[in-house]
Length: 246
Image (tube, rainbow, N blue to C red):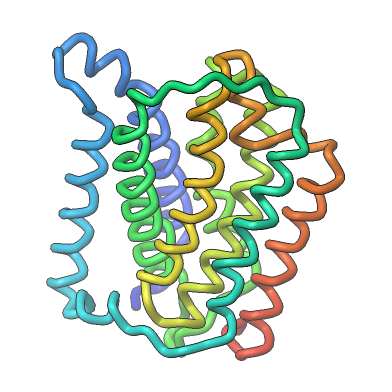
């Protein structure tokens, strides 16, 4: 890989911020251009672009490497814990069944493009020549993953947005460890989809006033605080135990 320079950090961070801004603005752009589900279309285009990038690097086939590991059990356990947290949040639910298909497709495409960009592309840029990672690069990639959510300030408010940022930093470290350890992008995509689908299920059936709470819960809820810490600790345990930290 090429040398990691300050420009690499700045470029990646800014691109993550711009992608967050793009998806924040898709609603207005979609309305202006009269294009339905523009956000999903953009996600699919990003997925295609990264797949072409991987193919040109002769790494596309590596996306499908799946070596069995007990770590896979975390894909089941973590969403169950998240579901438990959300069920303990004070929510008021009303069904909106017409949004089900859009929500499911959106959840799938989000999991795929974010894993391809923030795990595959991120790892290809910030690993050393031995395929190892500095601890601060792991944190940097997690922060870059979370920063795009900052634009939720405009419709979710400060509390819910910063809660979501803290949550996605923990999730980013955990998913990065899954990707590095399993050597497959499929595993973190599945984990990401499972966790997002739990959140989206609650958001789907929550009233508008409760949607922000449904997505992330209350950061001061002890379950969520512990959950974030567990994600971070598990991520670093996986990376340290299997000697991925340089």
